[in-house]
Length: 282
DNA sequence: AAATGGCCCAACCGCCTCTGT
DNA sequence: GACAGAGGCGGTTGGGCCATT
Image 1 (spheres, rainbow, N blue to C red):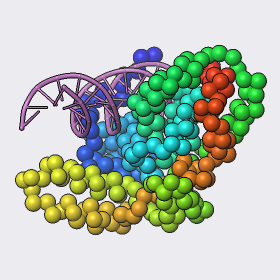
Image 2 (cartoon, rainbow, N blue to C red; image 1 turned 45 degrees about the horizontal axis):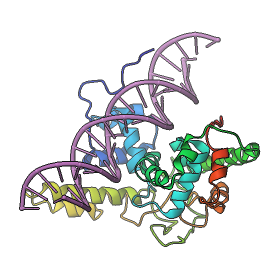
Image 3 (cartoon, rainbow, N blue to C red; image 1 turned 90 degrees about the vertical axis):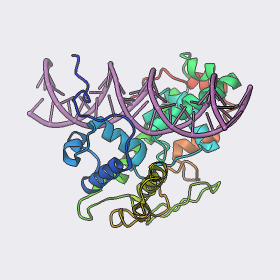
Image 4 (cartoon, rainbow, N blue to C red; image 1 turned 180 degrees about the horizontal axis):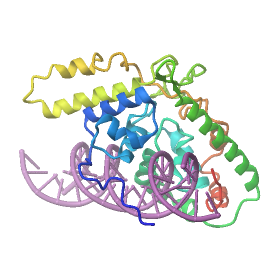
């Protein structure tokens, strides 16, 4: 039953991705859509294993990823969901479409764990395998329904439209404005790869800053200003995938709203009741 | 200004689940 | 139903960055 690691082959590169690799991967996915990761290394010529490609896409290059500080609301949501779901980061991430499971996991491990431990509430939140709440059935149903909705929306948002030869996001109904005005502007018509372009432009800039003391590299600016990525991707403001599940605006999912209605401070006891050891299957 | 320690995050590893044959 | 391969997930780690001494 012991299978050799998929990245065992010789010639498979490891370590940080270069901007060139990013561009190659993004270009391929823009053309073929995400999926069939097995074929990606051979089709693109990338010296990476399929897993590495998928991870790079989902955790970094995927459009709509918000980086930087977590808002209070996001933080609360994560704390609530962690109490409900345990360390199911992917499930938690489905409520924060702009955040990756890896980001949430990192944020939990580096910030929230510490914070909650200081508050003295971590033991309650994490350690409990205790009693189940009487209302378990009720919230579990809501949770299940909402997770399904979130997943459906996400898969629709990432669906590939062969006619337009583009990845399609259903942003048409999304006009969310941020409650705090931070990183939450919505541009429903912005291209799907805008964020990626922005990312890569920044990457290129940084990379060249670090390495171009010898090269005259005016090409850097040309590329980062969009002519290189041009028709595929244009340097537009960051947009989310438009799920209507905005983590920092008013359009939270039903469950998110429901969760955030509760005060974290108030409901530690409830957390204990609700936390963990439910066999919620998705 | 240099050394050191701690923090953060991208990426890897290995196991589990899902899907096709 | 059994098996194999691919994808997905969570835990962990290594290296770079930053603050402190």
